[in-house]
Image (cartoon, rainbow, N blue to C red):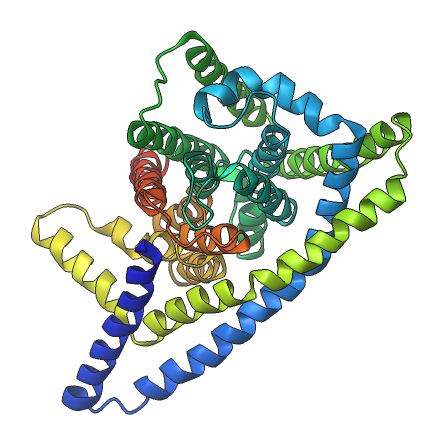
Length: 410
């Protein structure tokens, strides 16, 4: 229902702004631009889905081998103490906990192509437990918020963009991103737990969150001892080694269980193709709405109004120039990436705005894209408090990013 209101608002706001531009300012290009954006966004949505087909087939095939080989069940048992606290509605030891873990691990390593099919698999398994098929369950919402908060340990792609745009130290945003995304995820867990009345004040969760804080601190220390080139090489190598280890480990486990791993892979891969086709309408809807909103100039007006308000209070408004990336990130990952590149091109990769845009890009994830794809893949139309919790996590990431960047780069 919330997505419905937001989608309608995109079009109504865009139409009103475009009409005002045409009538009062004689801008005859605004409506053609909006129509062009509908066609280009529809094409982009299909291309994204088409591009996901192979990746979905690969990873759902690998996950099917892991299921039949018992790996997913082992992960489920290991994570059961923590997940029974965060996902109390999921039966203890259910295989979906293994899928959730694999998705979160892929996101943390910046492996977006691997994370999406794993996440879609987890959503399908949670939908099997869902008693109201058109309504998001509590576990679905907690899982979505963990995804939208964008916990990332190794933001390789952002560092690559910074290197290409001439940053003296492309990796100087590594620690700020790690801190901002950690606070975003922590806020998402707390807010969602409040909505779902989940008690986080218990020994298991305190030990888990404390260990996570210690792990983040250790990673920060280890990478701070490396130079930029070494950091890029190590982070990329570690991510790919872990990914290949997962694939090989699943196959070996299947062989040990005397599973026909080839047939199991084909069985899972077929599900990947059907899932990719199923999400096309949802992708078209959300990307067209975002494209029209951008083409009308509504985003530019929003940033201009924000800058005027901040400057009127006498507060330093330098951070406002980086806000297009932050505001676009919940709507479109590629759009936010374009905003980040534009900020670094306009102000310089090593400017405060360029660095803050990079941290914005890495501190949260594409909330509405994830909601549309993940809920759309299982036919959920009533999202309950998912959007609210996801956007509050995004807000925590934005505020953290601004504060941290002033601490590091001002």
